[in-house]
Length: 168
Image (cartoon, rainbow, N blue to C red; front, top):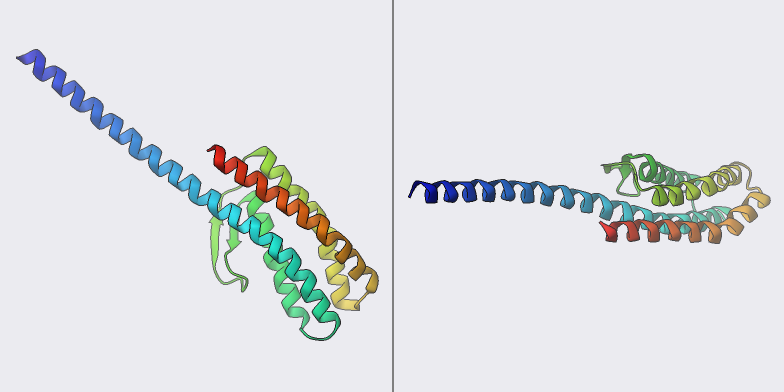
């Protein structure tokens, strides 16, 4: 009878340990999925922002909006891209009022795609600043000509993040 109690006790302990492991694993993967979902959502928003900025620049050219709207959109784009790559506070809204801490992208392929976007975005951001200050047509041409290329690069980064997330 003692050996039966001992076996039952061991099974009971094993079940408790297994339950604890499953709970911890569940919490870990649910946290990873939350970060992955936010990262994919923010990267997808970058597509929209890149096109919104071009639209705002064109509206500014014809005097329909103030440069402040463009500057704000540029800031949202840059802060989001930095947070996607390196982690840190990422703006959740376009007014830069609500932020969420995002961990750095650890996957090398995803990180590489996000860095490609950042490298392409640098000259566009510079030309946007020049256009705002001078209404320089050469800067406008550069921004427009690069918009489709950047859109494609952003789309590649979103696809990579999605594929990485699906593998987890």
